Image 1 (cartoon, one colour):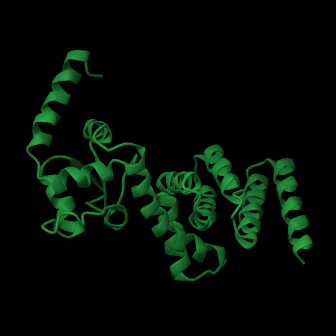
Image 2 (cartoon, one colour):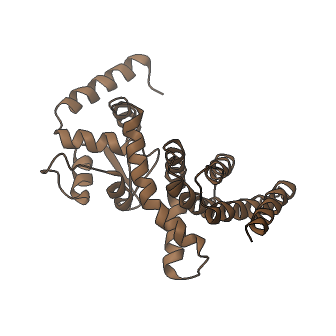
Length: 231
């Protein structure tokens, strides 16, 4: 761990470097700071909006510039990337309020939602397998997107993202946070009945699979009862 003095010097160094970056580079880093972990080019492309800077290059070159400036690090032979934590912390503090991060996460939710809708069809084709793998790899980001969609009252995004997150939760955690967010998405006033029942069904099965049979059966019975009342 760095000492207080070392942390101060590191922040001063980052601030000095930051002031010399092009505006679109600063904006890209600030937007990518919503990722609390690694991301790939597709996720970065979904998150970023650099329309205010016509000179900004395509996403592959954007990440290349960030690598050259030692703002991001690569993982898995440059398949995934992440901001250096000190850079991320600095960038988080440069965002213009919570609405800035919400806008980025809602863009991600718009990207994850169709994958969740595909998962809901319960197919066994290649596209579904790829969607499931994507959602599992990006699970933390999907959960953050659900949270943003709930806060923005976007049930149309929160529902499909919840279905997708539950596919990822069956393979890995964070279990408790994920289940809680998915149930909140299901309980949104404007949530469609079809998506609500799909989320409840998947939560019930997941809880039973995780050894919480009583809680899982209660939610499954609730889903069956609601489905019956819908006719």
